[in-house]
Amino acid sequence: MMVTQRSSDEWDRPAPVAGSYAFVVGDDPEDPGSLLEVSMGPQHPSTHGVFRMDVVLDGETVVKLKPVFGYLHRNHEKIAENISYLGSMPYTDRLDYFCSLTNNWAYALAVEKLAGISVPERAEYLRVILSELTRLQNHVCLAGFLAQDMGASGTPLMYGFREREKILDLFESLTGARMMCNYMRFGGCRCDTPPGWLDEARAVVDSFPRFLHEFENLLSSNEILMSRTQGIGVLGKDLAVGAGITGPCLRAAGVDYDIRKVDGYGIYPRFQFRVPLGEHGDTYDRYMMRILEMHESLGILKQALDGIPEGPIIDPKAKLRGFRPKAGESYGRIEAPKGELGFYLISDGSPSPYRYRVRPPSLVNLTVLEDLCVGHNVADTVIILGSIDIVLGEVDR
Amino acid sequence: MLGSGIIKGLAETGRNFVGSYFDPERMTTVEYPEQRLAPKENTRQFPFLVFDGEAALAGLRCVACQICEKECPPQCIYIEKSREKKPDHLGKPQFHPAIFDIDISVCMSCQICVEVCPFDAIKMDTEFELSTSDRFGGLLMHKDLLARPNSHFLKVHPTDAGVIDARRAEERARLEAKARLDSEAKAKEAPPAA
Image (cartoon, rainbow over all chains, first blue to last red; front, side):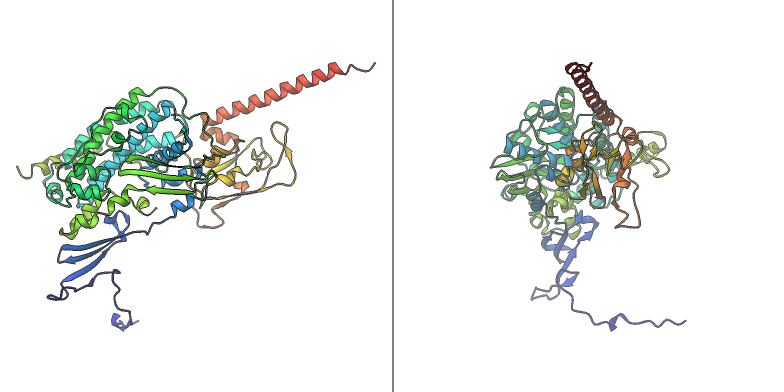
């Protein structure tokens, strides 16, 4: 049977819409058609989720960049205002789904402040151990993904994932789930460690430096990585402070601000650790901050695993059902792997919060994306975005 | 020297490649489903209802108090109370669920229902291979599909189940002892009419 080929021109289509795909902007009167507007994403592997960048290009150079997000909006805050305080704990897991345990801690901290609940010693130690393990696995993934964005397709990421797997196994045997842990409760943690868990954790912590050394051999002095990242996406001190950037991105710009030191929440003042600081604020510094922070986290983990006492895991006065804190407001914040994660709660004495607000580090850090990217090549925007370390679950909520 | 960093990195890759044949530390891949990892005791997937004895629906521990239905964050549980009561393991008359449905396409495996249940009636299963081609009916679990014997609970979470069984046995023993004392006291109070 003969197939008659039809021309694709037969179809009557509308003219291209701005932002939907590449089209010519041509707003330079001297040279019409020289600028090209490209929509990167939302379904693009380099954008780490459903995120879109509206980029105006002059050749290869970025002239303008507009981040577009909201594709993953799940109404987290409004849902939390309609269910019990305990009920939003599993939803916080889904904010930054790499670091569910630090999200749990930030929320638990805010509620504990609101209701004036104390936390037993052993639970405090466990919280530190779990959040530092979370930091390790988050940073190791970030470094892997960053290398992936640069074109090192697979190898560093797989090495990172191999180590992350060990930490996720620890999470699973303690909390029951690998990523959506839902472990912390107001006034402590949900259950005590199974027998031998602390020894397993110690074995993972002890074997981690070897991996970190390997990973640094693989990447840190690699000339390709250095030339792709050094001097790219420089974030100045003033801009970083002015825009409210927190976490490793801020410290890469050389600002000494770590909430573990500033607030000393939990029992962090008891541990000896340094806060690594960058000098240039470029992508390489942001990468190195993560590597150095992992070394410090290992130090904290060793101290915490040695010092963890026996005892109750949850405050006996803490109520699971029928929890109604008295009217008031509180803000609990912690140093999550990505920056300052805060929960702002207003209670009117009812079983669900009157107002529930999340201060997500990813969203705030994302606001400087244009300042970092303008003037660089389009391929660099991908690396700069990767080095900011966003998770869209947290950006859109 | 330019390029030394790349060579150093390649040496690391080579070491990993060769090591993946000899070093158990580097042989991490498991060929699912032919090979499986040993399940962890605390693992949780979807809830099930515990029953005692032989008959699944008659022995359910659930008393249809509907606390889990209220507390469930994604609201995936639906319960309807029975009209009549029947005795539980302590002989106390209790309601039982006429309908107990869990929509596991909505369930997010958070374990809140397990924590708030005062009767140890709902627990988390470790079964995860539940895919089905029927996405409406196939994922809506009725109480006959949810019911599992206590022996299953003992198998998947031995520590938890052991603690709960011991507590229930103690409660029953205390009640029996009290009943015995009561009947003895009654026997003393009312001497046999002679």
